[in-house]
Length: 310
Length: 298
Image (cartoon, rainbow over the protein chains, first blue to last red):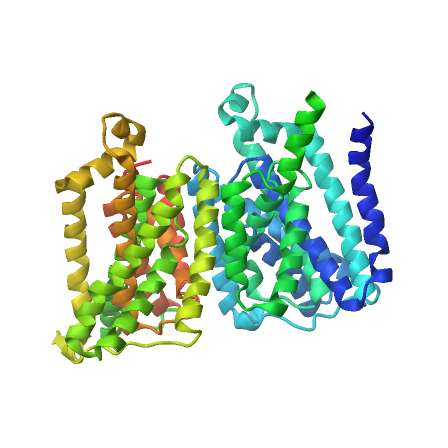
């Protein structure tokens, strides 16, 4: 019983540590920490679809990119208040998620994933070529931000606050009756249908929610990076986010957070020493798939459960 | 928007030819993917990397033999065999132990191989562009209805049907092809009657890799051989096998035709976003037939 309460305290301790972080870290590391946070949010939002609903969401980076571009375009091209821009990005992602979901949802697992990743690459291609609107392959740079969040510390705290809020919201969603229903669909769609769960509608809702939070992560990217570029929605990045989920543990809530932190930090430090980051990532992924298919956190959770059931 | 070209002009016809030769390449590569997908159930993201290795290997062979028609034809055979050897190592070394895993894991494993192979190509061949010149034999063009049609494109139009017939013969008329088809339906049962399924799987993967390599070698004279040439191709190949019906070889042919033609003619209609037409065609096909045009082996 005592152990359990310690496990529940961990997220709170983590939050306190994260609030204190910019006070002790230099500027560059604060920036990296902000990237870690928003990437963790991205991975956790993907996990809603893939880990909790069992949908093969292979094109998740598109929603991240659309969220970022939505916010960036609102900030640079419209006279609307900035707060609206942070709403438009995620909502655009959610809308795109709904449209793509409607096209793909009739297909079975792998078909769904392959079609989604290919349609996502269409969105990428359009963004990549539409110079007059999206800036084409150059992307958009020097995006003007509201005063409070323009400084490195300001953007970090904004990212932290929004991420914490979204993670809390996702936690509540997973624990809600809706969350139970989507997990039931993941484990056995036929049985879920038989006891009266509208499978397609729940899957669509889960896709839209995942797309929305992915879009929030994209908006945060605009705040931290001040720029957007088409590669952030390229399909290889979608699979990279999937690797983060897998590495941390797909059937745990905080697993993707662990995986995202590991990959982002590794990438930052590896890029100093080697130009063969893909080789390193590919090797890590191969090892994880062969030896650790439940992910890092998945292994701990399983051990912990085995112990507590004894 | 607006139609920027008369639909029946010579421009349209030559664009049609470009589309058809592109179709040939797409068909060769995607029939390999369809084969692997149908029999082994692996959505092989690394298929594009094998295609890229095919192109780089063809360049090396041609450099090694000093150019000319002989060197070119030798490259068309040797390069795919090198790729097939890579495929053999991947299948026997990794996939053969992991067939019982979920599709998701297999897909991510092939993605890992794509990352690794991409960097290995960078290490072996360097980051520069490479180019292969069309051998003198294929240079110049024939005139048909007053249209200049490059000989190399006509050569590709000849190769495509040959490959289709060859594949049909292998799948329908040889023992190993028949076993592979049976394994696609029920691998366990094939094993139960005493056939070594493992080697049939290895053969299928090697044949699929060979086709990817051949596609890469054949396109080598038409494009800049570069890192990243695998990235866009693999998405197109995915779409082709989806609209054709997973695992169906004729579906791959039909899908390639739809994709290649809408792509090349779409560019004519709307230069900037012509790239979107094949995708619209795919969505239209899938709304009408969610499981692809032809019967899937799944």
